[in-house]
Length: 163
Image (cartoon, rainbow, N blue to C red):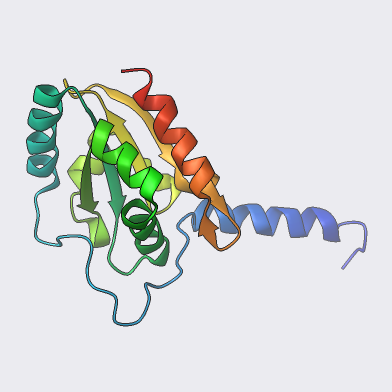
C-alpha cells in the first residue's frame, strides 16, 4: 500500500462506517425494563399526545427508539431522574415513546422525515396541531458516555420558550 494513500483510505473507511451504520448500538443494561411498547401503534400514540398537547398548550416530544438501545434507556432515565428536566417536561411537553425496532412504526418514521437516520434515540418535536418543529439528533446532547443534563435542558427550554 502506498503510504501517502493511507490517510485518504482511512478517512474513506471511517466515513463509510458512519454513513452505513449511523445507529449507536450500545445494548440496554442487563435486566432493564422495557421502556417502549413494542405492540403500540405510533400513529395512535402521537394522535393521543397531540390531543392532550393542543388542549393543554404543550409541545409533543416524540422519542423514537427501541428497548435494546442503551442510549434510549439513558435518555429515558435522565428524563425521569433529573429534577429540572422532569419539571420542564411536565410543564411544557407531552412525551411519547415510539418503538421503531425492526421496522415497527416504519410509516411514522417516514412521515416525520426518517429521523431515525440520525441513530437512536432521536427526538421529534410537534406543536399541538401536529406541525413538526424540529428533529434532534440526541448524539449532539451527549457528553462522553451520557447525555449532558445541561444540553438536554437547554434544548427543551429553547423550544418551550417558542410556543
